Length: 174
Image (cartoon, rainbow, N blue to C red; front, side, top):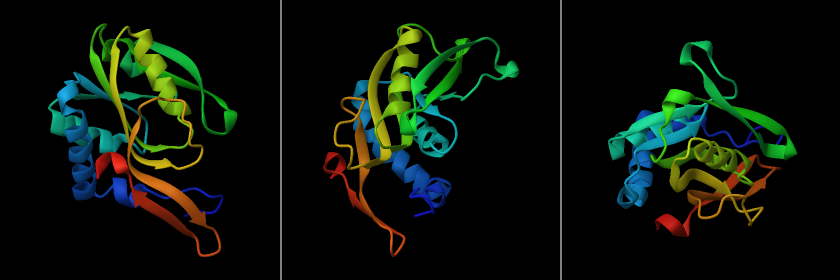
């Protein structure tokens, strides 16, 4: 646990063998939905999303906080990020085609604002969301903005005095 109540996950997501195993577990959960691609938000969710896409044999698409000139024209949307902040998400127009089946993968979900932003982005492309998977979701708030999101792990609570996070496996993947 980092100062300010943030959970440090980069040691897990940046370790290639662990990221690969997490990606394979997520891919197994969504394999039957036959996604055409995996979508994630930059930056910390990329390793897990990449390994999920690899296990599924599909491409990875990365939404950015702002468009990059080298990616060509982009679709931009506003969404409610963490802490009730309005944030911007951009995705290159050539990244997704109408009718494609998209699996959303991210590293962390609290209320689901960023994930809902990705769902909204997929709708802008007239594509279909076939699932939403995350490595860790908080127990609270219990009601998330995205229905049906599946988490591998549940962050139950923080022990602030010891600086320890209490995490348990999700019933979704047991």
